[in-house]
Length: 551
Image 1: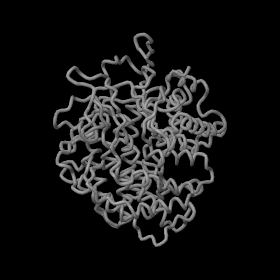
Image 2 (image 1 turned 30 degrees about the horizontal axis):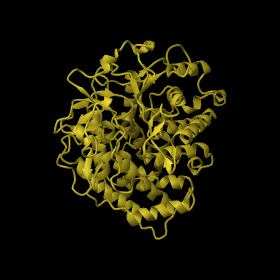
Image 3 (image 1 turned 180 degrees about the vertical axis):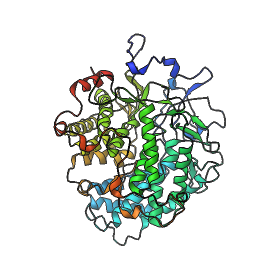
Image 4 (image 1 turned 120 degrees about the vertical axis):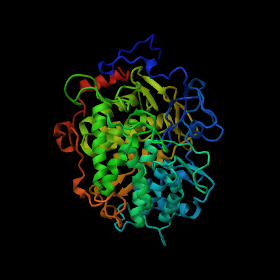
């Protein structure tokens, strides 16, 4: 789209931000990179890398930063690790689907063939959420005395998956050493520790989204080490937030605590940091986690949210969460990324269902236009900035959670629409393929492991009303990689008092207290008639459709 030939009027709340204002200064060249820990490539305006520039760390060996106009494949995230990633990541999906024979077969294959004693350099965040999290989830499922998913027990099982998880976590621990802030290095070699040429910059999400998996491991083992290092990293990041806005940036120097990336948003580089503040509280009951989340959520509402105050009433533009400068709250650019589609699901967990409905409708409108979500969408130009779609789960996840909260059949329709799009545009001979371009529908020869661990699982659960996950009475929680973990008392008690500073260790919440402050609505306030009509009034639906160029 040529903005000069086809000008798009700015929404009133957007202000008048010239495109040049979001572009780099003359001495900066567009660079490609993904912040470790955002589960995704993140495009950064970055200096052209010299021999020691951290851009080199963002890609596999010998792949360099290149300007955007060279059509480089931005969708590269070297997470494989040479340790059967997809097999491990999909374990609990088999269990949730009730396929005990395949689950047992896969678990035995992991026990017999997987080893982490490898000369492989891996991303700490990806290894934690995809591998460590899945091993722990499968172990919990196998050892659950109630066996809610059917008989998922393994004959002569001797905690092998827990031992594998422990072994992996021990190999990740060097990432937390020799950093002046306690914020971990983004990468570690499973045999040798932190590589000597490692760089000192990491993402907020990558460093601050380890607490759920590390905390579960600590509490299963009775060893505080893992939870302690993960919690220390969260506290270190939290201490670096802006005094003015309370916001955090997206890239930080782990030695100096200096913010290298000053963008504050809900997408790549930041997303799961906020998610895990709440989910850590849900799982472990530490009130300071909820206090941090409530404060962060309020600051997000104050500085990132634009549009009318209410989702489903009043005048003005549709609510939207934008990217701002962490210090000033000023708009930094005019795009959002697909990872932000997780946020409505997080809002459902705290009861802010009305706001979740509006933001979900915006992302669904983009899906309707392209049959997929582009990795980055420019709402000013009404066009993709980055056009690939790697089978991401975030929109499906929010759709599933909104259906659970409202039981409105509209979300079943959304799920069917997504399912049909996946079948039509991404299905390949032996799996499902990343879309290289959401407009042209060209494919890439790759299926990310999160397609099986999350996208398929959430779609399945959306339509499976009688699944044990739903009949358990809120017994289960999903990690950021979609792994199922039990919410029970054994994770709400610890054998140590050194995790939190003196006096805070006793601040435990009861399971019934899982209610966050600072929200505008809650599940109980969704009127009955709204459960059978469109969740968003038709005039507001049309407004969002116009906003993304559907009408």
